[in-house]
Amino acid sequence: MLSIALSELVQIFRNRLVLVTSLVMPAAVSAFFIYQHEVFAALGSLGYIAAVVMFTIGAFGLYTTTVTTLASRRQNLFLKRLRSTASGDTAILSGLLLPITVISLVQVAVIMTVLAMVTGEPANIVLLAAAVLSMVIMMLGLGLATAGVTNSPEHAQVTTLPVSLGTIAVVSWVGITGTEELTLLKRLLPGGSATELAVNAWNGGVPVTDSLILLVPTLSWVIVAVALASRIFRWEPRR
Image 1 (cartoon, rainbow, N blue to C red):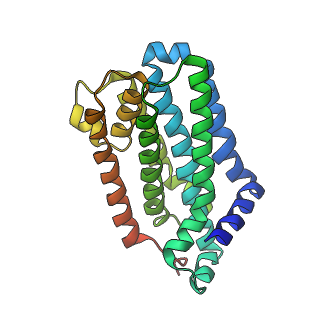
Image 2 (cartoon, helix red, strand yellow):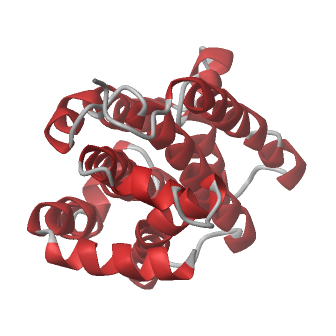
């Protein structure tokens, strides 16, 4: 697995398009939100900024790169060749996705640290870490499912748009308006409960037990995504 991961890390830094989409663009957008933190805090809250930054990296970095990577490796038959080795399916997928997952986690950690230095520390760092991890797992699961219906890296530019833009829209809706109204709907939408969890973790004022319940909808999306991926994910191009 580690040899696959190291090889994939090299490929990420060689591919300018992936480098821009997974590193530069999410970092630039996050920097803008932090620079204009007073405006966005007035619109929503500091917790909203933390949530939208977290999902910007997750949606446009982790998720899109996951789909693009798997579609590309399938197209050039690399996935097929890997399956002929001693590595199991789980080890192959873990090795391919480990580099971008680690990069995304480091990005989130750095951006959150900068936000905390500028605006003040979050109320509950452990709860915030739980929100980040649940978001990462959900976006990986959705990435695996989307890769199953993506024929090529170019096709990924189309297939990733609904989830990428949809999750950011949900984050903004929940982060700005809260969950006092349409509570169930907002929490069940992809990213909704993770957004509320991040907002609670940063702003405080909500009991930890009430916030931990918000992990359930996010992890439910993971189960749904993995179930879909197990049915539609392909290791070879369609003939």
